[in-house]
Image (tube, rainbow, N blue to C red; front, top):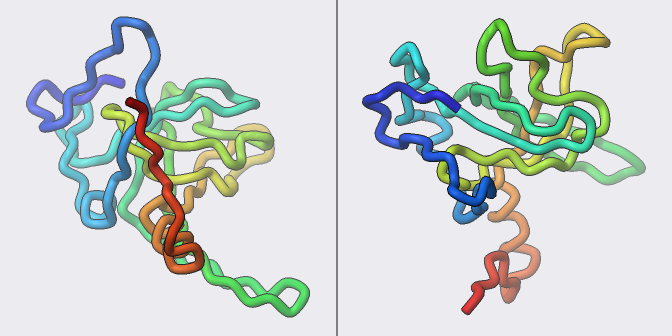
Length: 153
């Protein structure tokens, strides 16, 4: 993760090599990223550790897509955002088997969960992530007494 030197969210490799997952990237920041990539372009630099592809770095877009399904008489709507490889030299951000992986930013804030990918069969060039702020709203609505962020003392 090589953000621009002037990025408001600089990445610092953790001393123990473990990025702590804490907090959620809110809707406003997904739609209007405040981070800068190595070229100084506004983007949200993301990372995930998937079952198939392991640790990969990518760029979240602010493009949103609404997905509506009707399976077995159950209607559902979901929001997805697109994740691209970090640059042209990087491989695919995700592949078959990575679905359900948590995607975070360089500060360890959850962006969302991988739900799919598209592109050429052997190199998916776009991964789709359901934003966690959206999932969180639905979980809280269905289970108002739920505690999504247990604290350690």
